[in-house]
Length: 393
Image (cartoon, rainbow, N blue to C red; front, top):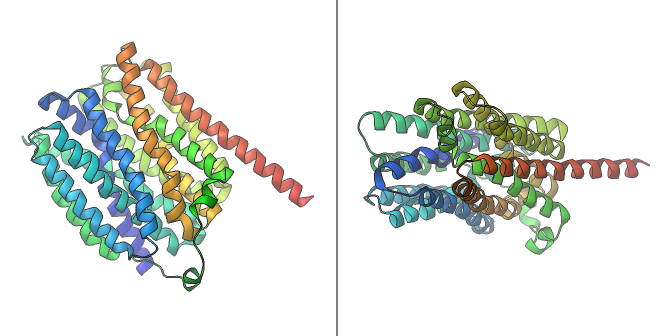
């Protein structure tokens, strides 16, 4: 029963902290009603995305000594405090940056680490699927956030009141469910030394995983941070722009599950190649076709599905290469690639949009980065096959 409760609780915690993927809805309200610039809105998003993987490194080191549920408590408390501060900021950029970007960013790091690493310890034989289920909650978070946003704003509430409500509700949920994320104790692990940082950072596979995470998430984050703005330049209706955010999250959710499931049968290397190639083609489609409302929503779904693979496949491959017991130590360092992408992706997209007047060149860049990541792992897959043939001979 503990293993099932751990997976379910981890999924819901991910659902709460994954609300950040609905940021484009919050950003548009801050721009419209509180005179934020597009750059300021992306700074907040970028800082959160950058801080939470860095936090995971710190948590990974503490994870050897402290019961994991306490990390959940810290996540819930900081999430509440961050959103609460932002809700009473009266639209002050610095306070919202500290509340959402910094405090909620740290909260996301604590919550993501415990919700990702705990379930896979109970199901080491199904790393891809279990990692996919846990990570899928993070992808689905934007669906609930967008629905809550629409309900509250249609009833006359402003974005700061929305942040207040979300901070209290999600903070309490994270605090409560942390009691049901159980840590599996393996006697053998107590006698084994955990991997040293200097050992895995110097390995070739670490560098490939790090670069792959950066390239894949750079592409997706460039698009997701400006999803509504990209659709608006094609005169997509506002209703469908909001729907696009929700559909992206749903597709992201299924992408994490399905890519994880596929990787258990075909291996992570080949599946990473396929997922990033899929994402690259979906992104460039934004430039190839003249977008109607329906076509816009379809392409958004395809991008979201491809993007979801980034958060399952690299974690699964990390556990496969370095061992499940070292996942919480090694993966946060690999995930720093995501932190860098969180700044570089949205900022590059914003710069190219301001420079050229449209997202045409930003979309090309995003597609190219994802394609580069796919080719990197195609090369890795081919090298592994050659090595296997030599061993058999």
